[in-house]
Image (cartoon, rainbow, N blue to C red; front, side):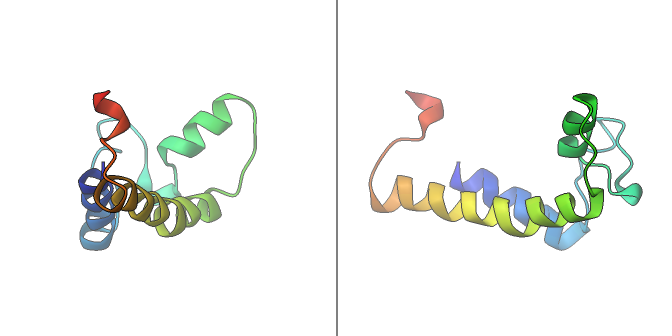
Length: 82
């Protein structure tokens, strides 16, 4: 899992966008992300730009560090493989 978060973060650093958004038919230019799509489908109105920055710059790195610590420091297997 730590590797997956690292790869996702690198795609944002290198390409400045989510490479799968085109496969999801989401327009990254208008700050539409998978998360804004989900929240808006439930009728919630959010600031798209702020959500995009929050997810990409705070949540993904925090989850990456947490999963690294979980797997490498605490020696737990990824939850995906239980």
